[in-house]
Length: 504
Image (cartoon, rainbow, N blue to C red; front, side):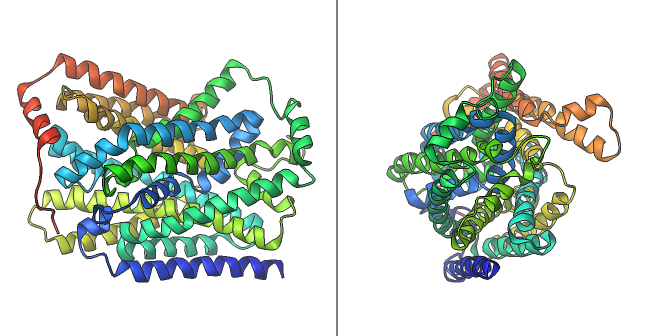
């Protein structure tokens, strides 16, 4: 009976998404509709679409379990950082200026932003290639998070479950792109908020935790709130900073600002996105931080990627609530997959193929985008089967993309003196630093198990933070040392120019 209720809940969720896709997909008529939703998204739609793209099974399953295992209740700092730096500060600093630039210049993708700002087609091509290739590990990490859900909570073969999710993500994206995705994200965001509130109540009240008094007692134990050494604090802060500021340079997050209707909606989105992140990320990491109340390290503690699913199973949740929680994890993951897939597919079609073939009809570009979205989902599924830890795959992806593009994107919104030479220097510096752990992982997959390789491949968050900081510094220093007049002329159009007609 338990499985029947759970599957019935999941079936209702899937049918609801398909219905949204069919109804909304009919409204998607152009490339602009497909990629930025016709630039007509309100505050709630934009903010919840941003939040659901931000948080997936990667956070709920991978990061929450790993930080809880390593840092106990200190791991909640990651959730607070995501709310303050990844949502509140990100929207305050980036949303309104990005919306303004994207609206005036009719931008559809992040690589196109770079071409318009720095007058460099090669930069756009490079950005498109990097985004498509290195979003694959992040997408794969989402699949890996769902694999543990299928195994522990549903008791089914993860291959079948992941194929269902992949097909659902493909349908939502190909039905109508941003329009379908944003409306699906709105529904999924509501489900996520309700699910997390219920989950927090039932987990805290369960026998393993013992209510508020048990929580206080847990906080006074060494496992619950450990005394951490300098190395542990560095590791925790690297996780907090990467998962918070890493979003500032990710195309699937940045392009959410492109579709905001007007400045008023952008202002309202600041509050909505922050509250959403505080509830979802704070709640998710808090649940993971309770893992030592459930299990003992070295005795019955599961592997990091399986901690949270086992906690949910052992919390004796009501069948209906367990079904809702599974839908919560599905909602978070499918919305992220759709956002990532759309960003990757458009990067390859709009920023690589269409740029090379300038006379390509918009209709053909749209078809190519959908085709590349399908290809991206298949590649992600293949990479997910390498069994790389969730945290590692996400850190490789976020580190390389944000390490490369955060600086030239964020600084361009405020600094007119930033030039093409400085931007290229920052991009290449960040890329070369952040790719080190990923390269070591590839060597390890090729049976290279030298101690240095094994150590470095697990340092993704730290290298991601170093890459972002180094890229910012290099961008500013090199731009100051190589300022050119023609770069200023390009900048003038970027900050003041208007493109009247949007490509269909």
